[in-house]
Image (cartoon, rainbow, N blue to C red; front, side, top):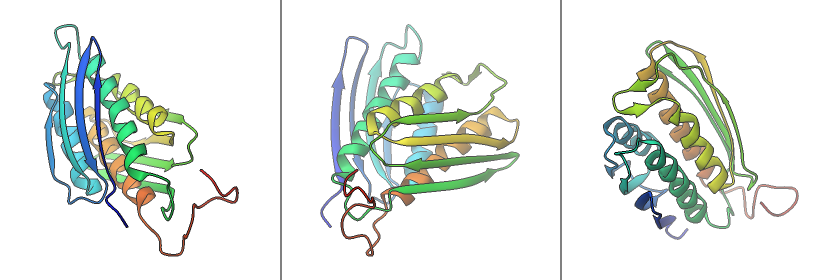
Length: 196
C-alpha cells in the first residue's frame, strides 16, 4: 500500500487554506485557524482518527467564523477524497457511537462517491467560545459534498453543547478511520457495480 496522503491549497477572496492529511498517521496535528474551539475540535478529529493533520487557515474572521470553517470543511473533504484514491481495498462504510459524559452521538458514513448529509442535532447555545454552533452542520455538509461522502450524524442524548460538538467530531473521526481502513478480503472496490 502506498502513501495515502494529500496536500490541498485553496485560496479565495475570503480564505487562504493549506492542508496536508495522512490517513495512515499516528494522530498528530498542527492546526491554526484563528478559532480556538475549532482548533480543539480538529485536533480531536486527528487524534481519535489516527490521522496526521497539518492545517493553516487564514480567513476573514473580522466578518465572522463562517467562511473559515466552511472552507476548511471543503478542503478537508477534498483531502479525504484525494488521499483515499481509487478506493480499492477500503471498507467503504464506517460508523461509531461515541459516549462523552452526558452525550451519546452517532456518526455513520459511506464513501460511495454520492454526497449527502443527514444531520439530526439540536444545540441550545449560539456559540461555544468563538465558534458559532450553527457552523457544525455547515462544516460537515462541506465535507460530505467535497468528499463525495454519504454522512449521517445523530445526537442520541445529551445537553452540554461543548460535549455534543466534541462528540460529533470524535465520532466522525472514528467512523472515517473505519471507512478508509484496508481489508485484505477486498481486492478491488466494495461494490457490486465494480466502481465507486
